[in-house]
Each structure stands twice: as C-alpha cells, then as structure tokens.
Image (cartoon, rainbow, N blue to C red; front, side, top):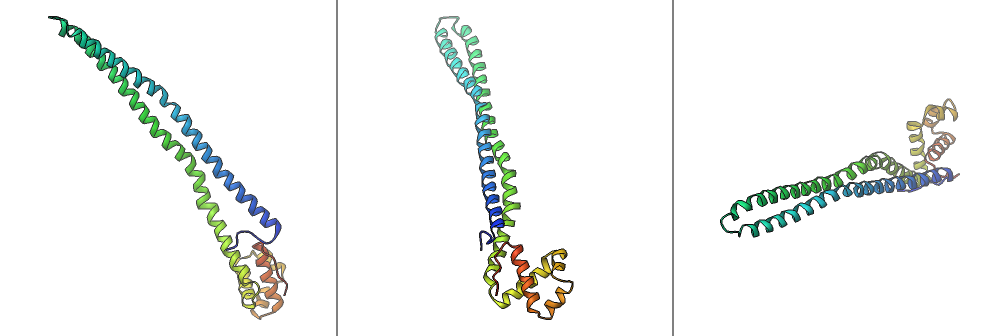
Length: 202
C-alpha cells in the first residue's frame, strides 16, 4: 500500500487531512475526559451526604447506647435515638446511591460523546483512505509495465467521468479497443493523475 500520493498538491491535501483527523480524534477524547471530570464533581455532594449521615448515625447510636443504660426508663429513652440513627443511615444510603448514579453517568456520557466522532472516522474516512492507499499502491506497482498500463487505461475508461474521457478525444474508447498505444498511454496517465501519482513517460 502507498500512504501518500506522488504529486505535491494531492500529497499535501492528504497529509493535512490526516493531521486534521488525528486532531479531531484527540479533541473529542479531551472533550470526553472533560465531561468525565465535570460529571464526577457531581458525586461530591453525595460523598459529603454519605459521610455526614454515617457520622450522625454512629453518634446517635452511641448516645442511644449510653442512654439505654439508665435504669427503668432506658429503653424508652433509646427509641428516639434509634429512630434518628436509622434516618441518618437512610441519608447516608441516599448519598451512596447518588455517587453510584454519578459514577455510571461519568462512564456513559463520555463514551456517547466520543462514539459519534470516532464512528465517523472509522466508518467514513478510514475506509476511503485505505481504499485509496490500496488502489494507489497497485497502480504504482503496475504503471511501468505494458500490461499494467493497459489495466490502468481500462480502469480509467470504467471509472473516470465522461467529461474527462471526452477531453482525450471523442473516439478514445474505440482507439483503446483497437490497441492504439497513444490512447492507452493517455488513459493510463489520466488514471494515474486522478490517483495523484506521478506519470512516468515511456
């Protein structure tokens, strides 16, 4: 496979496009990381809620344990502390649940943000780039052989627009069928130029 064209304008365009694609991917990866950071900051209130709830629940449970030692009325005095400790644990659980939801969002949202740009690169740009590299590599390998020039001429006849073919003459297809060397050369050169490859005069 041939990574870049021989002709300067085409090679420069390919190089600039490749650099822009790499920058495009890098930019979206940075955006995904930024989204991850922003979303993870939303977990801070949940962490504080969990920490505060757990601390209050532990303190209330301690206080309830101490009050429970009071003779006769200890059990009655413990109930409000136990209820408050349970409420504080519920607050801590809510904070923990919020952190889990934020953690899932911090994973999903960056993936969604980077998936579409990467899909455009992988399914649109990359196949076209690889197809050109394969075609250009084959064309560069056969351009010096007589049989290869015939194949390039046939490829030009089959694939180039009619407007380009008619510039070579109204009877270019007939001349190629007749084996006219000048017609074969002109068609082969047309295909090579379309691929951005240097035409080697024979």
